[in-house]
Length: 313
Image 1 (cartoon, rainbow, N blue to C red):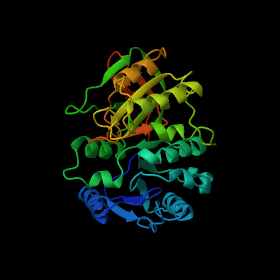
Image 2 (cartoon, helix red, strand yellow):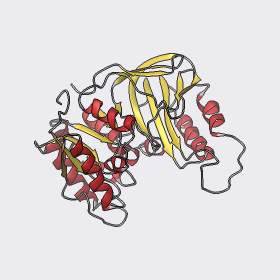
Image 3 (cartoon, helix red, strand yellow):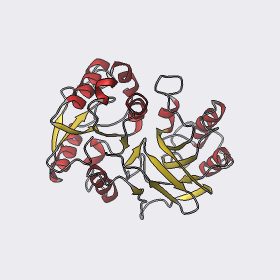
């Protein structure tokens, strides 16, 4: 993989899951890339629709495989998340992908592909904005500037925090180093039992979530505990839990006994590892692109997450 993707290079756009809701979002995202000096190449099936998905699993797998093989494409961005990425995984030729590694970015349901690419190729991938995330105007400075810096090869150092957003806080203190892995909490959970199940032993586990009540977050974390997935983690980094507070959640009227903070403290505070909550990574207004599969240091006492090893080498 090249040490960075220079301006003038081509960004390949794939849709491994749900199709975009509006064509205008695609045009706005392309416009943003072109304004930054990049070219954009839509995959053949990027705008297809087949039920809930952007084409059949075969079409979506073909587009992703083609983007990795295409010498014209320097980086690959997913159109959006949604649902369906896991269907694509068994259809991919990971040996071929491993021979042509590229910058790959997406979030939410794309977690399945992040996990599979790490498991089968060892490729570092990036949990960051989708094309439709770049359709808003103005694109939040943290979202756009962080993506461009990482794309250019500036991948080590502290992960930025949002001065205008929620403050990062420690749920449990301490310092730990490990490989940074994770994604959307429910999608990580859905890798359990698959050949691409995430290995959390000795890892700094990152997660975020959207539209889940405190009760549902608690249920997910309980499952992680009972499955033994948190037994040997080195540390936990929690991004944004957008729409997960009781006053934000529009789901069934569950008994609202515990707050989201109480759930996190009860489930994660006694693990004996550092835990930080509130990084601007997830389904919120901004998303600070985060490399996955790299060595990182979590210092909860200093409220810092630092990427130690280069993501593009």
